[in-house]
Image (tube, one colour):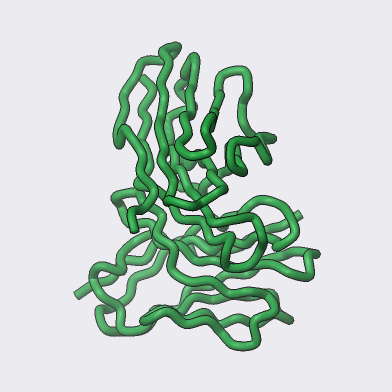
Length: 117
Length: 114
């Protein structure tokens, strides 16, 4: 079974530029998550989708970050314009359901390392 | 509010020895799940083991086992027979079954030496 796919793996941009990350979850997983992980910290949830609907985007800086999951499968996270403090690893994860228990185990992709200069 | 505490920022362990990584948590939810993830330097978060709050037995997955003490709100990960490939950052995480986010601790860096 294929895991969570993400691209690109690395991205270097200058501040005020825009950037987009792509994620394809494990087949059959209804729930998709985007996390931001700053160096030395645990991941922080940015946004959570259930199929193509947003479940939680309370920690997404909506003035510059946006995300979509139009067909309920793959997803795109965009930053526009980027700031220096956006330098981080952006992790995508998916889970089978939100039913609680082991079905909510989140499986992560390889992440995208973003450096904003 | 949930809180996950990992008090060991880093530790060295010799190859073939066992290591215990501490994790305590605080929640008012009666039903929740506890997770451990491994993050090597490559960056990917790898799921290791799950423990449900109502599970009667401690979870085991190969060389990983979870020492779950519900009354003390602790969920320590035990890695037996450490290998060089176990060198990584290890995160404890918790999520209530009803609602809420998967909350991560700060992580413990493990270095396995020959």
